[in-house]
Length: 94
Image (cartoon, rainbow, N blue to C red; front, side, top):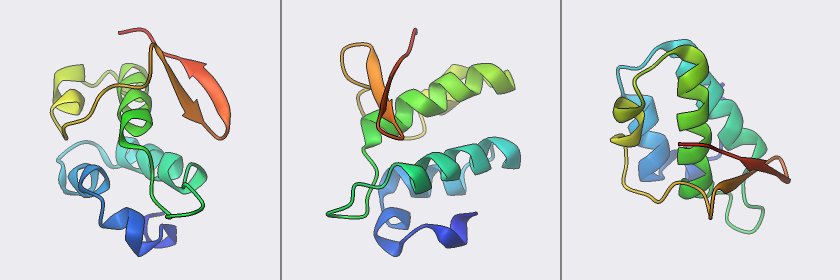
């Protein structure tokens, strides 16, 4: 999964943080899927705030402590209670 992500996104600190974490592989793969489907076309990077919101929402499903995910990298969490995923606006609740 990680090999399908452009180098520009792999070099982002938020993506590196997930890759280097000791979180479960299934969780990491979900994160990499998010990155792949949410690359910003003009720079081939992912919006860290949307990425963080998605990871926190996914952590609930995997029963992972949200503090572990929240502390992976510095970023706001989404935008005013929402984040984009595959061009769809999703609501998060934390």
